[in-house]
Image 1 (cartoon, rainbow, N blue to C red):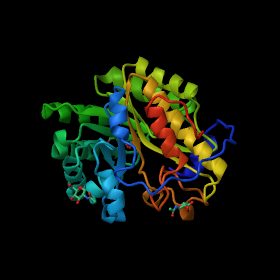
Image 2: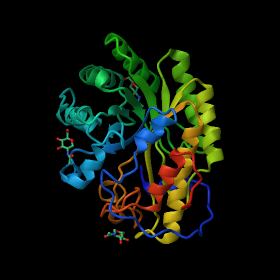
Image 3: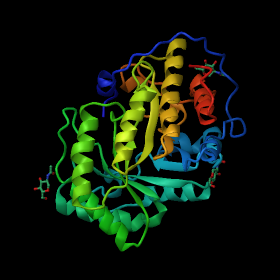
Image 4: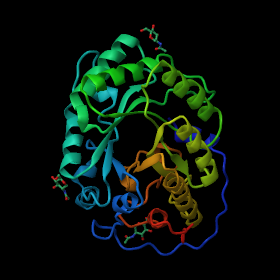
Length: 343
Ligand SMILES: *[C@@H]1O[C@H](CO)[C@@H](O)[C@H](O)[C@H]1NC(C)=O
Ligand SMILES: *[C@@H]1O[C@H](CO)[C@@H](O)[C@H](O)[C@H]1NC(C)=O
Ligand SMILES: *[C@@H]1O[C@H](CO)[C@@H](O)[C@H](O)[C@H]1NC(C)=O
């Protein structure tokens, strides 16, 4: 997905202007708020962050000492290492080494794993898909407590990729053969506000899959937003209640909020804080929304870098030097059920 495309279609303009407090001290594992404990105290299953074990992040002690704390992050999602390109680099040739590394790190640091993902839009030939899904589910087994089965299958006009229902069917069959309980999710971006894509998720993906069988457990809302375009709590509640009405669980799966220009301005930081606040607020208010995941928590390791995204970036709650942004305060406050002092 391109960030520009996402930004172009997100629709809510926000008010800015509140003063931003001066940045706090460098966050270490002792000062970083205990997001997972806070979320669990309010009945959620976890608060998590993605990790990419192929990046330098795993050699960055300040960063990893935060990641490692299960009081901070109780779940992780491999950023890349379980994608098809890694797990089946050539047709029929499987390599689970890097994904195994993520599983090991998660186990050592007390985290559940959302395995991500089995099938992307280009990979939908039935035979190849079935082999891939079955092999991968069988390999990782219950080390994955949930899985994104299909990722980003809907186009901007609402049309969608063929054979999705089969992907879910094969996934459920593989899970049943293991006698395991692994939750199966559809994951996509730009499905946080009512609109064409949400309608297609409801009418095409969910309805089709549910009418074929009991194959889907939930929706992953990617939540890539920006400092000027992001959903309101009301919009999020509307969409989440549609998913929940169909009996599905909801995960916030890839939460980051890019500043459209960098370095992120004072008003940009305010908008960013509000966007994080809104997404988490809506999840906290929705019983079926059981967990939230940052798409990394330090700008240095987030996928939206200014050099490759027309100057947009600074999308996480920590600056590269590991000091906290207002957004981190907003996240802590919303998890505590407090109003936002920095929005
Ligand atoms: C993080 O946890 C892993 C797994 O237990 C350990 O190998 C590593 O040394 C820890 N790193 C830091 C900086 O705490
Ligand atoms: C769906 O699967 C069939 C059978 O393998 C294949 O012919 C078709 O191209 C697939 N559709 C897509 C969009 O990949
Ligand atoms: C960390 O980086 C931010 C953004 O570049 C900067 O505003 C802040 O002064 C830095 N803090 C420290 C302690 O270096």
